[in-house]
Every structure is written in structure tokens, then in C-alpha cells.
Image (cartoon, rainbow over all chains, first blue to last red; front, side, top):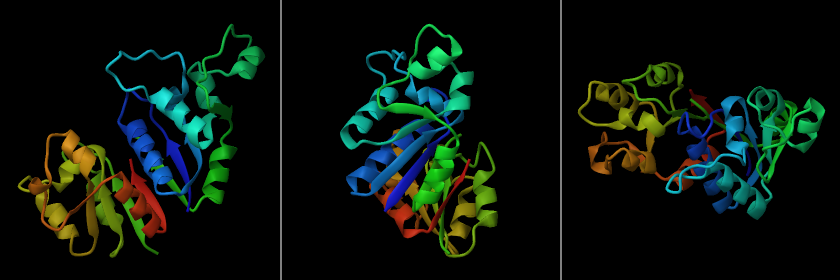
Length: 130
Length: 102
């Protein structure tokens, strides 16, 4: 079965991103296809590689990146939500005249159309938020 | 069409469980996750609400979230089933739509 996941919260506001990650892992473990994970609203904060949590804390961005590397999971960050929160990839940094970018490996920045497409393409779209 | 409803707030904090139960059609399933697991506890002011729902719905609670809050399977209302994340995925597979009550 083909799954899409929507994450609406950042790693430090709510449990949503933890639940979404555990759910995504279980989807892959069961042999389903994880078509896309879309990060919206504060959920874009899942995708910064500049976060440095304490050693004994969980490292959500890293976990997502590892999932993308191991399974080719498409991790998409909403561009409008990302721009408001200072999350940029190389192209966006250049376009906006910023001096650097902070997107974590395996993530890409795109538009809401990617969420709509996931809703159409997937058998299930599961939402995690506050 | 059968639907899976996920509730992630404690009934002591918000009324999403009440709203969910008010809208869910008979035969649909309800999964309590995150702080929603408090709704599955036996012997609370909200226990009757969920016990009543068992007549029309199958009710599940996410075990890891229950355990993370210091609670065990023997503290929940009889008839509520405990699932893990794999069980969560199975429920989404079994039911055609998934509605998150945020």
C-alpha cells in the first residue's frame, strides 16, 4: 500500500514529529511504500541540519535524513512555511540573498502541490500535528 | 466506508475525544495516541464516555505512548486493545480513511 505522511509540528513543540517518524518506520518495516513525507507549518523545523540537540536528546532531523538515505524517502518541506522560519536550501538562499543554507540532507523544498499530489497518489494520507 | 479516527489529546485537556465520538459512525475505529491515551484509563471521570463508545466502535490505544506515560495495559478499560506502531499501520491499512482529530 502507498502511504503519504503530513507533519505539522516541529520537534520541540509536540510529540507529533516523533509519532510521525515511528509511524513512517513501521510503514517501511511492513513493506509498504512511503511515497512522501510533507512537512508543513512548524513541521519544517524537522529539516534543519543546524540544530544541535544535547547528546542525550533525540536527533529528529538526523533520523529523517537517515531514513531518506536508506529508503530514498521523499522528504518535502513547504516553501512558504520554510521561508517564514528561516529554512533555506542553496537555491533559495541565493534567490533571497541570504549568506547560507541550513536544510538537512535528504530534504527538499517545494510547494503545497506536493501535498495535494501525495493525497491523490497515495492510498492513505496520515496526518500528525498538535 | 470504514474510517479510523486518531485522537491525540487527553479528554482532560481538550474535547477532541468527545467531538470524535460525536461524529464517528458506527463501525469506525478509534485509536488513542500521544496524550490521547489518558482517555483509555479505567476509573477516571471520562471512563464512562469511552466505555459507552465500545458498543459502536472498536477502540485501540498505542502501547508505547501508554508506557511512556508510566501506565500499563492493566490500567485501561476492558475491551480497549493495545497496539504498537506496526498495529497502527495495520489499522490504517484496514480502514479506508484516516481522520486525525487535532
